[in-house]
Every structure is written in C-alpha cells, then in structure tokens.
Image (cartoon, rainbow, N blue to C red; front, side, top):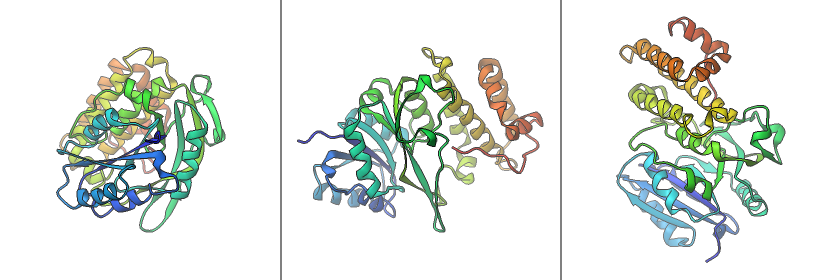
Length: 321
C-alpha cells in the first residue's frame, strides 16, 4: 500500500445535506496519497449511507468509522490513534477544500519535512466568498522557527496541518459531548511546534451562516457552560512544562478568552446572571493567571467591556478567531 502523506479527518453528525461536497473535494489527482477518515458521530440521517458509497468506490482512500454520538472531541480522540498519514488535518463535514489547491498542498507536503504547515482559508456564505488575510502573510512560502519569531502567530483549526507523530505524542483526550474543543486541541499541540511552513493559499472553504453552527449566537446561549469549561481547560495547558514562556500559546489563550467572554456577554438578557458569571471568570483569571489577565487588556474594546463590569458592550467589540 502506498504510504499516505496526509490523513484528513471529517467529523460528521447529521450532515447529509453537506457531506458530499466535503468528500468530493478530496477526490483529486493522485489521491491515493491521502486517507480520509469519516467519523460518523451517531448520525440518524443519510450521512453514513452517503459516506459508505465513497468507501466502496475508493476503498484505498475513504474509511467510514461508525461510532456513538460523542461530539467533535470524541471524533478527534479516536481519529488520532487511527491516523496513518505523515500529516494530520481536520475538515468539518459542512466545509470543503479547494480541489486545485489541495493538489498543490499535497505536493508541498511531499517535498518538505516540518512540524506543521499553516495555510489560509475562505469564509463562504450563500451571498459571498471572503478570502482571509492572515497576519502571518509576510512569511508565506517560507519555513520559520517559531521560537525565533518576535511576534505571536495565530491560526485557526481550518488553517492547521500538523505532523501526525507530534499529534499522537502530545494529544490528550478532549472532553466528549462538548462544543468548542477545537481551540483546546490547538493549544495542546502548539507548545511542541518548532519548524512551521507557511503558505498563503485559501485551501479551506469555511461555510458561514448555516443554521445550527456552534459559533452562532443561539448556540452560544445554549452551550455557554461548555464554552466556559473549554476556556478553563485551555488555561490549564499553560501550567505544563515551559508553556508560560511560549508567546504563541499565551497569545492564543488570551485571544480565545476574550472571544469567549464577548460571545457569552452577547447573551445578556437570555442567560441568567450572565454578568456575574463573566466577572467570576475574570476574578479566577486574575488570581490564577495574572499575566493572561493583563494580556487580555491589550484590546481597547475588551478593556472597556471589562472596566464597565460587562455593562457597556462597545459597538466595535469583537474578536477574529
């Protein structure tokens, strides 16, 4: 069997409307270089049936994994141990790759050996497609040593592609039946990255505006306790090894904290005692992670929100994740 250069993990729960587009985007020239693990997370619709048809047609590439519903984290926990590719990348079942750029990306993976590859993405709605302009674009096309960069580097789960051996060595089980665990997954791996290759191509198409997305205001209102849990667990990653010195991890944890608190604050009037909850989180942060508390004040919008004890929500407040 040809050695796999890339494992693509597709986490799917009741995605019959979208998963075909995700799977089709993995059908490219020389696709035997990849394996696609389709994690069917207890779907009750035709997700498994659609996925099985791809496995039957391309058995050397697609593998359907049927499992009880456990959420995104449970899918990743299982997929990490199963991955055979040299590199590891996640694709949500309602998103898709740019097929021409995937071929280019696979060629890049074969020609280089590094801890991670960071590409960019596009946000696609029913109205428009907006290509992200990453902060790290000046490094595009180059290999960088993270510990030599003076500025912190921020990237999303959509942009990340890690060496599988690093993921398997340092991944710790994510909480099951919990949303927003992708940020925790990234925080676990970042401290162990040294050499990173940056390539500013919008490989990943991220669907926005879909009803039921975890990032929607409605979802945050329903699952804010899970958001708080993941925030606390992300902070605990800082307690390990020399993580308090890792500027990239510190920046991520601080930015994630700001974003999560802002998201919950937007539930004001719909979540009971929301201001009390947020101030308690701030008190915990200040007591246990003062340097992160101070780092979260480097944005004026969030500083105003905090100074007014989460009363005033400036019209420009927000956080790009």
